Image 1 (cartoon, rainbow, N blue to C red):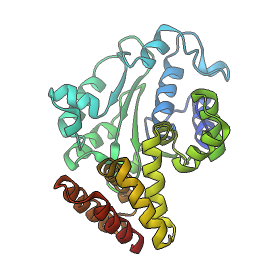
Image 2 (tube, helix red, strand yellow):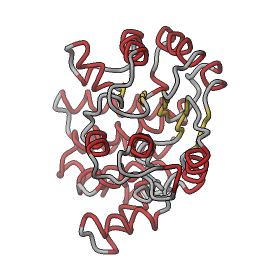
Image 3 (cartoon, one colour):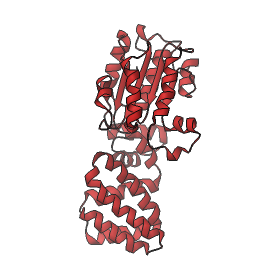
Image 4 (tube, helix red, strand yellow):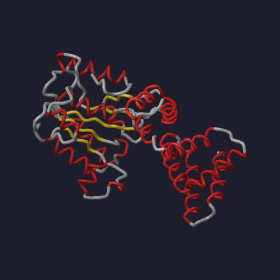
Length: 312
């Protein structure tokens, strides 16, 4: 089972054993960084439980992947499998996807209405909430009522990067499975097989990806890879003054504003893990961006920014 998902052997073993024994939890929290297989695992679990060709109680095959049920889940159009995320919330509100920052109580109430209906055509109803750590208090409290009295053959899966903002009452009523970062070898091999990269390029991107296949795919873009590499270099390596000035000069020529924006995106990711240490860097990046928008000399702005980041 779950052969199409990279790594995560412990999670696969737990879920496979539960599936074969028919002792599936009514609620899970899949915990780990983006790009390590959480969403894919949730989708594959839904396929296995609803597959019309394979019987999960009689073998190791998992889902067939091609029956009408599996095909609908792949296309996200199965009436019994719901992804409750920012895309769905924007659709429900008729709003802008870019403005979705939290999972709201109205979205959870929509899910609860679907939970209360009869199964349409599958064997199990699956609800996947992502990002679960972005539920506001009202949404989390509302979800708790459903977790306390879950309907039969219904599974709720919360996908989260961390548990700090998830109420303990929800954690206690769910089984938490931790997803580990993928190894560099796994990522580089996948890139060579699926993206036609040579081994050197694949290894370089794999090292920068920090175990996230999602990040690795994004870093195939040369500009993003360069910005991420630069961010890490300034934050983790002690550079000579001449090296910093050369980096500043070359970056100013290739696109200062784009580089600052890309570095800001990386800083925001770090903020989730190391908020106190990352706030000063974010302030520096935001100030630098404001100066660039005012047409202050790009190399001067980057000189100051790069030296300040090194001092941190």
